[in-house]
Length: 231
View 1 (cartoon, one colour):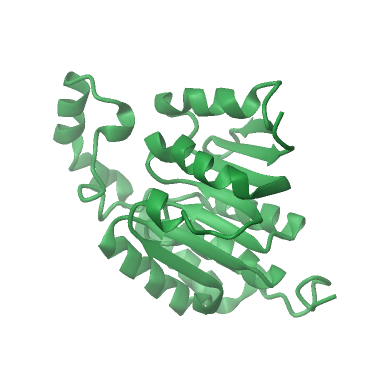
View 2: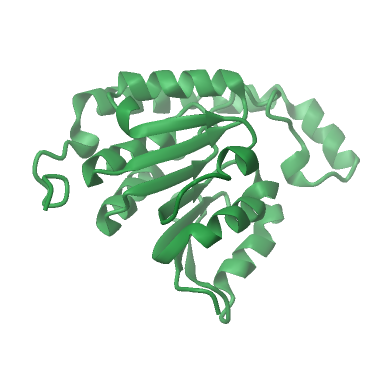
């Protein structure tokens, strides 16, 4: 048994470097409402054009928006990863790296590794810098580009998947990764109250499907699903 497995010398979310980075990122993310407000004309135009909610804004238009997980959601991600001993973690949608730091902290404590992906180059650079500042760069990798390309060569098994990128890609990314899941792997999806994710939630909660799943709404709406095998 390793030190990470028995809980010894596992700094987790108490590491001063991790605490400092998370505190800073959560403070910076509080300005998101101002940054999103600047995009109101583009959103209104998309609504009038009857476009899907997920396609109202492009990655370039959202390049300065954090779209963060809350502290409660971040701690939930860390807790789920630690409780299940997840050693290969995958994140779709790093943004500035807030959720990435939570997941990478868990990966370090389990002796594992996190692979994340982000399409906006400026966010990739910022997220990598935040991981380095938190002392987590050695256990986490952020791949730049379309997730359907950057995650295509992942090795199995994948123990935990966090979906928090563009909502219209949740199912395609899941389709890509599902063959790499093991029985008991976790899939966590954020913002499942978005209209575009109704089909995703229905898929995860189907009684004859591959998952046992529940929606958590105490802090945002996240779908937490356990892969139980293909029907």
